[in-house]
Length: 233
Image 1 (cartoon, rainbow, N blue to C red):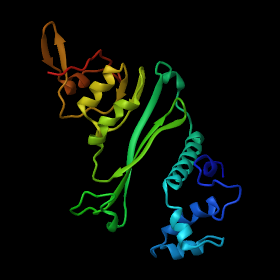
Image 2 (cartoon, rainbow, N blue to C red; image 1 turned 180 degrees about the horizontal axis):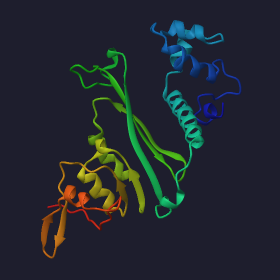
Image 3 (tube, rainbow, N blue to C red; image 1 turned 135 degrees about the vertical axis):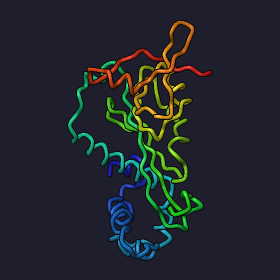
Image 4 (cartoon, rainbow, N blue to C red; image 1 turned 90 degrees about the vertical axis):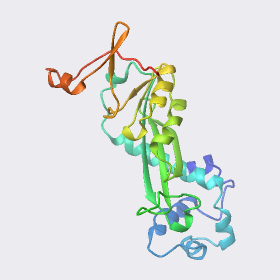
């Protein structure tokens, strides 16, 4: 109920549609193989409400209510997990973890959530997610079309990062311009190395290609630490 009042899904002391019932009907009963129309959805609700009344509930306040419920559930779940060593994150102002997840939706929604096409679904929805580990809160939760690749969305990441912040993501977000923008804000990033990218070391005024496989083969330790910088030609 707190989420419903905070997002103004419920604006009166007593409403016709119970927010918990509405959430349960859409999330769980709506997963049935039978397409859920307004008539069937209305029958799921334990109250006297017309189909028009249910239709009017599909608005911006309901979207915010569902997002708030999702954030609350995910946050409780994450708090149940074992914490990593906080000493590792002590030098950062924030630790942002970014990833995405996608799922197919009915093809008639392709004009809202276009998919990749081909052998894939014509309609696909993707959720971009950013969690601040140090603060224990969500920094970003955004739904996009499934046809929007993470690499293209990556250009939005720098806007989330503050000075001395660390952002962690996978190879799907690998964009040199994103790394450059984060670096300019005195931020840090952690990602796997793209094997198509060459590494260079500076020897005086000369740049020498770094043979990383050979370097790792001769490494006796489990890690290599180097001072590096980003540069554009």
